[in-house]
Image 1: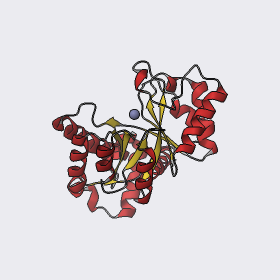
Image 2 (image 1 turned 30 degrees about the horizontal axis):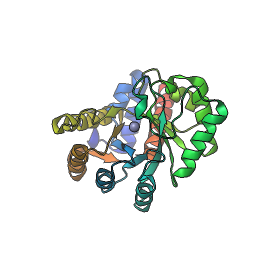
Image 3 (image 1 turned 90 degrees about the vertical axis):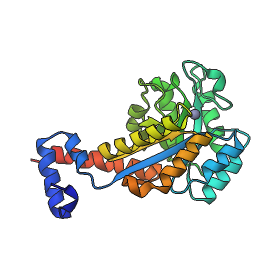
Length: 267
Ligand SMILES: [Zn+2]
């Protein structure tokens, strides 16, 4: 049976039927279209690479490190090109904290120091739609500090994307408690910089999207990453996936979990 040949109204009935008798996995198998979002992290220090990253087509999102030498230039170009921009907020990690850079949030800060540092970072970057964490494998485990973070994000009506640098992150739970639109990364594309590795990760990304309906990747402006992404985006039709912005991805994920839940409790 090819699911794509079934008229929409029957597909909907089939969806309710399958959802009632089965797990969410079957639900995801009959999603019509798969969606992918991509965030490019750590922008602001390498103008040549960052400019190439900015030239990628479609609704790619750009996460800029605060107070970096090229932050303003990058955010100006990105917003002119109608791209989504995130503040890539440095947060204390378990190790390598010498890579945090300026404007970092750390565990030893008072609430006042924490909030002031974050507000200064926010004010330094125009046109952001939200925040994702740079590093943060230690700070994102702490509910108290995540609550201070979500209070400010909620005040500005921003979104939060968990880069998921720790499996023990509580960011999602605290975001939910504070009604902050939230999502988290599924895959890093370029933990290694060689082309084969990155291309394999892009395939993995496509597979996650086909399985779940949506997938979110984080990567960097390394030249091989941009080459691989540029190639992928050029041939996107062959993969039968669509690139969407982060805000749209969050909406789709919210809608999916609502329809899944309502289908599952259907009498
Ligand atoms: Zn980062």
